Length: 608
Image 1 (spheres, helix red, strand yellow):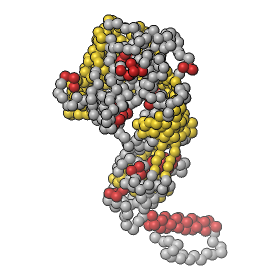
Image 2 (image 1 turned 90 degrees about the vertical axis):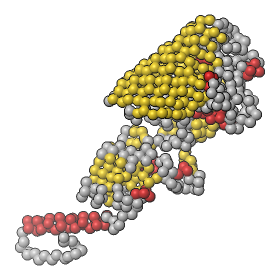
Image 3 (image 1 turned 30 degrees about the horizontal axis):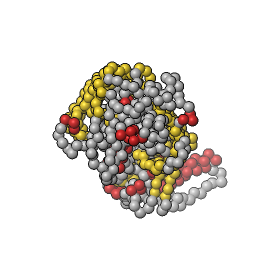
Image 4 (image 1 turned 60 degrees about the horizontal axis):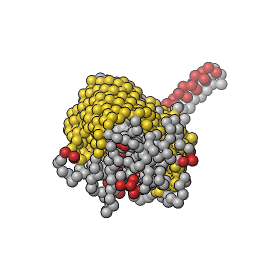
């Protein structure tokens, strides 16, 4: 092939040559020159020998935040060639500039002059391909020979690239695997048809059960959009020194038929003999379990539920469901055990309160609506949970309560109870947000609520500036306890409010700390020991709320059916801290009550 460097072509022109002839010849020379230049560029673009090995490109652990932000920046740059789904750079083709593929398979047989990103998909490099830049694969695998035709670094993480779309842009969400959530006992298995013998913990640790263990067979059948799942679990409670006795044994049987994948209906039933917790709307089971295991502080109360129930629901998407359930069950009290804790020492456990005992028929309607952009690290959207419960039955044993809280005698009972938890997440700027939460719960009709269905507004989740169920005065607006604190403590400090209202607001902003620069060891900078680094959010917050009674004789706590207590009687605190995603550390100060020291506390996950 003729090139300008290899040969000098000399032409002698006649002064009388036609203008048309000159133009034709100039065009031919231009084509020849272009072909020669392209040949020389291809020779320069291909390496003499292949560099990075496939094995050395593999990274372990979660994706570092700096890599996530880098991928986000490349995708959001206008000059990037962005493709959704499968894409091929054919042999002989050249892509000039950065190339990013999302959610498919990227096959490169030609040349890319720029950076290449494969996001939540696989990348294949066939013979004859070459990348004049770096190659990054997030949430996929690389299919290539051991020696890679890439001039720059090659990085591969199998961890999924988590993101949310905002118009044509991507907003990444950081990995949260520092503290993994304890496994829940039941869920629909998305793996398809399966049969297995399963053993797991009961997702918590408490002063009544110790660590409950669930084990037994479970299986599922999948046929198109139809799924059928069954779990047959026995329960063994380890709180009484591993003794095989009736109080330590229970069961949980679960069956569910589902029609539809992303939207559809579910019908099912369950048989159960389990220990349940009061006030599950506050701290998570993981936080309560770790606090009990490490510090001998259990922030929940427990009672026994033994019965059966049938349910049906309609669902749409991962977080939206409307469910109805009806069942019959026997309620009974559980005694506190001398379970082991890590740093408990001689500190005694708080007594587990006695509950109202009897047989109840329960009808429950629950709804959940989730429009958040991300369930783990929400930046915008709504989360709404509502529950309506009607109970009717017979109370054989009435739990003791302080004077003035209620006047309840054994016999029939009929009540209606509700709970509403509404959360709104608002993105104010790319790195700032304002989130608000309102929780309302309590009596809606009928007789006074049983003790195990009541509320309290105190502690690290609701009002962290106040100690857990600490009373102030003869009539406490946080727990609705009356009389001396010693009497209330002897009962185990139960939640006694028939109604409660809590409002929370927080202002958050992202921050990034790199004391000694950015370094990437073993593919995950969060586990680097040679320097300190942190990514998270600073948080400023305010909380205000209280509880009250509808029935009872203590007039300072009793309000009419349509009344809400005056705002000046509410408890309020202010605080701030740092949220690192998997955990957060905060300080809160009570402002509605004087002479209280600030509380420093730790949360696993976000505040709400």
